[in-house]
Image (cartoon, rainbow, N blue to C red; front, side):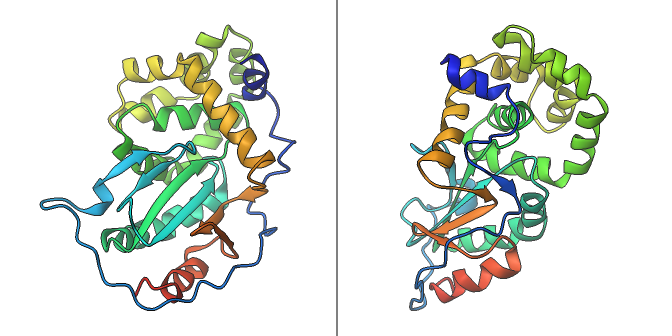
Length: 247
């Protein structure tokens, strides 16, 4: 636990050589496929409202048996990830609602404690709220990072506190408790989440694994049915989904 928690307060993740907006992705595999018929959600629901935590540390939304399984490794502090969210989150959810595509977000905390803090806060509620809250972070990333940079010294000092206090104090210093309270995560919920050292440990371990074992080298990185695709914008990703059968 100590090693991973040291990571959680360290400088950006050097071991993974991760970079926001990196173009260093593997070539797309042949994902051509016939058109896939829509698959209905359970009565009275939409697939976008069906979510679960995965064994790989992500949050999956949509039909868990969808024939097309899209995974994003994304950093909540990554401007390129934010651009994808702003441009692509709603049209992507339309594909998810068809039942043809599931979407899993795996938070890749490449920027250490600020990423860990934001990631924990997005996971303070139900699984169904993780991706909408992540989209809210990305939609307001300039404001959030502006506050973080303006209060960098106070945030760094918070990271010197005991483990169970540091992320609570850090979030308070840069206004994140108020930000999430306005979006349905009460201050009490947030404080409890940010004091959960076991969950922080797990988030740090998954980030290390994504870099060292899964060979993820940048954010956002997208994989479709296990194949890394050469796309980090919605305009590049949508044609790949369509060619694979989401049409």
